[in-house]
Amino acid sequence: MKSLQNKIVFITGASSGIGRAAAFAFAGEGADLIIAARRIDRLKEIELELKKKFKIDVLTIELDVRKKADVKKAVQSFKGKWRKIDILLNSAGLARGMSKIQEGDTEQWDEMIDTNVKGLLYVSREVIPLMTERMEGHVINLGSIAGHEVYPNGNVYCASKFAVNGISRAMRVDLYDKNIRVTTIDPGMVETEFSEVRFSGDKEKAKKVYEGFTCLNAQDIADTILWCALRPAHVNISEVIIMSTAQGSTMLLNRK
Ligand SMILES: NC(=O)c1ccc[n+]([C@@H]2O[C@H](COP(=O)([O-])OP(=O)(O)OC[C@H]3O[C@@H](n4cnc5c(N)ncnc54)[C@H](OP(=O)(O)O)[C@@H]3O)[C@@H](O)[C@H]2O)c1
Image (cartoon, rainbow, N blue to C red; front, side, top):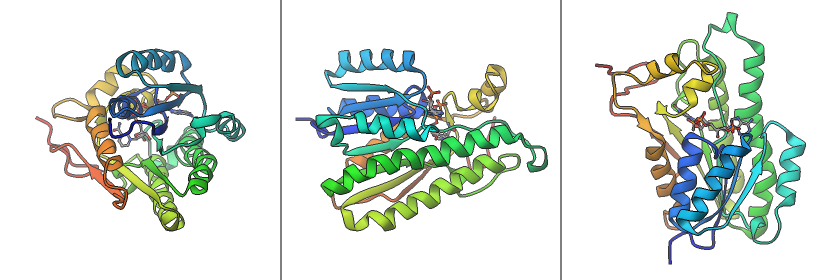
C-alpha cells in the first residue's frame, strides 16, 4: 500500500509549475487529487495523464481563487469522499511586473494581492473547517524567500509573500490544537512559468532570468512538499526555505 493511498489532496495552481509537479508527486504516493486552476484545458490533460499513469481518482475544477463566491461554491460542490480533504496545497500565485514603488501599476498590485493573499485565504477559509470537523489535516502554503527578504522592484510581490508568511504563522497558532499541520514552503528562484507570467508573456526576458546558473526546478519543490507531507503525524515542518546552491539571497546569484 502506498503512503497516501485513500488520502485526498486539493491543489490550487495545478495547471503549471510547482502545483503541477506536486500533483504528480502526490499521485505517485497513491493520493486522489482535486486539481484546480483557471486553464481548464491544461487541467484536463493533466487529469488524463495522472489517471493513466497512477490509476488514481482526480476531480478537476476550473477555479479563479480571486472569486470568493466561486471558491465557496466549488468547495461546497465536493461530495462524498472529496469532502475529506487531507492536504490542501495553496500553490496558485503569481508576480506581475517589476518596478519602483512610485511607478507601480496598481492593476498589477491588485492582481498579486487578490491572488496570493486573498485567494489563498478564500480557499483556506472553505477547506479548513472540513479539516477541523475531522480533527485532521495539513495545509501547505507556497510562500517565497521574497516573504523574508525584499528585493529592489519586487515591492508588492514581496509584500504579498510576507503576508503568506504571516498567514501561515497565524494558521499554525489557530490550528495547533485541532491536530492540523501547517507548512510554508519558501523557495528562492524556481524555473517555471513564473517569470513568463511576471513579464506578461515575454519568453526571451523570462529565459534570461534563469541563465548562467543551475536553478531549482518544480520537481525539487514537489519533492520537498511531499517530504513535509510524509513526516510522521506528530511532526509539523513549519517552514522550509529552499534555494539553488548558486543563490545566496534574493539579490545574490552566482551566474557564470
Ligand atoms: N517560480 C519561482 O521562482 C517561485 C519562487 C517562490 C515562490 N513561488 C510561488 O510558487 C507558487 C507557484 O508558482 P510557479 O512557480 O509554479 O508558477 P507558474 O508555473 O506560473 O504556476 C502558477 C499557477 O498558479 C495558478 N494561478 C495563478 N493565478 C490564479 C488564479 N487567480 N486562480 C487560480 N489559479 C491561479 C496558475 O494557473 P492558471 O493560470 O491556469 O489559473 C498556475 O497553475 C506561486 O505562489 C509563486 O508565488 C514561485
